[in-house]
Image (cartoon, rainbow, N blue to C red):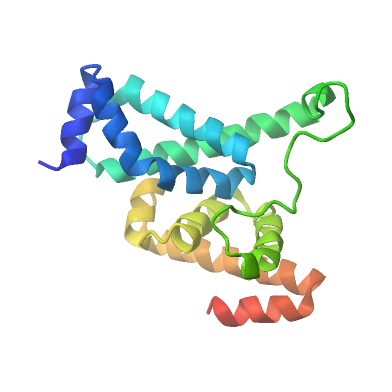
Amino acid sequence: MSKENNWIKSIAKGDEYALEKLYNEYSSKIYNTAIGYTKSVEDAEEVLQDVFVTIFSTASKFRFDAKVSTWIYRIAVNKSLDFLRKKSSQKRQGIFTSIFKSGTTEILHESVDFVHPGVKLENQENAKLLFSVIDGLAENQKTAFILTQMEGLPQNEVAEIMKISRKAVESLLQRAKSNLRVALEKYYPERGKHFKNTTK
């Protein structure tokens, strides 16, 4: 039995030490996934915490019918999407006080100029552009793109995470890349062509 399976069994019994082991193993991966959705360090940290609270509270329900990593990524994707929906709903309801820092007109949330902390300095300008257009993708396309292109997960595992076929993942990825190319070419023709060449 894998160490992850043993950790989950222990977590199901309330073992916080096992939870710490699992956290050390997966926290950076889940944080990177969350930040791909939220584009905010603070929001990604909140999603990360929510993911591991959920793992701790639902470990006893895990039936080991999938890899532990698949289960964890599935929770991370769902929590990230839920967070974005909640944030979008708050904006639509006009809760402007949550957008600004107390006593100032400074916007609390990150702008489209957010730079992933793992992006090298020489690539930051391209990263800003890519993150800004990723926001315009449909949820399932965004998930397929983030998990395969940003997290480097194989399409078979992404298919398990999303509970769809591998061919469906491939189709979503193709549509995501196509939509990203259109967006990039519309606003930055030369960069759009470069993205087209690097994502074939």
